[in-house]
Length: 270
Ligand SMILES: NC(=O)c1ccc[n+]([C@@H]2O[C@H](COP(=O)([O-])OP(=O)(O)OC[C@H]3O[C@@H](n4cnc5c(N)ncnc54)[C@H](O)[C@@H]3O)[C@@H](O)[C@H]2O)c1
Image (cartoon, rainbow, N blue to C red; front, side):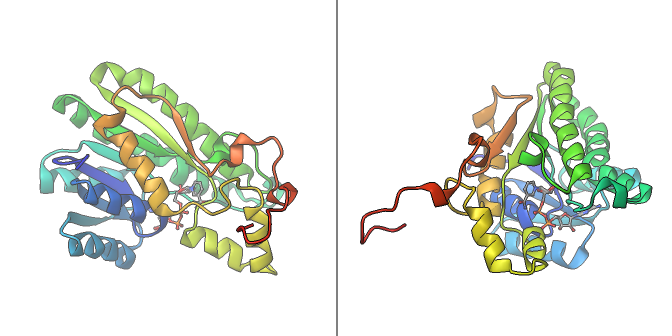
């Protein structure tokens, strides 16, 4: 088990990628603090971990609030005495043009997607330094590496996550604290389903989005969780300051559409 004996905090772990990652961390032997604003679903993640023999606690946390994040770290230390891993995963995408966005909406998006990382790092770094090291993983996105329509605040926040990650890696490498970020492509989570279900023709939207993914499928929370395990485990102990892309090949292309592929011979799967 690759995270045996480690204590991990995963934010936004009540569903989606955060839940997938919390479950993978526990499967690899970590004790996990499930932190989320949603209590019922967060408790359910704890139950899912415990049902497989793992150990977890839920701490209700709004990551945009400094006192909540401090409490999340304090509760973890009260329970397990240390913090080895922090996965700053909580976040959301606002689909709105700049001209339709209020100042309060902009500030909230930045607080959840970006300021939350500042808070988390502020409270775990002193502990990790005393312990002799640690691993911090931030949630970026392919939308932090290239532009995307109708989501200017989201793209700006994720681009900032990538640069904050590099900067933190430089500041804390001397303390043996590694800081990386993971940049998923289109991942099948409740957030994605909400977006798809709101479309006039959800099936057509799924089909169209998949034409742009060379692997021909959406990523799963488990796919991202497995990459997260690698980035916080000793297997990646020479790696810090990177943006690790998990996107089924989407960003490899300047232009790509599966509709341009040659037709396969009869009998073979298209
Ligand atoms: N799904 C994708 O395609 C995709 C792609 C790239 C990056 N991401 C990023 O991955 C992360 C998780 O996305 P997801 O698709 O699993 O979303 P999701 O909405 O399914 O899950 C997000 C979780 O974060 C929690 N959360 C939201 N605001 C919070 C707050 N203020 N405090 C604490 N918890 C809060 C929610 O309650 C929820 O449990 C996000 O940062 C997102 O931007 C997702």
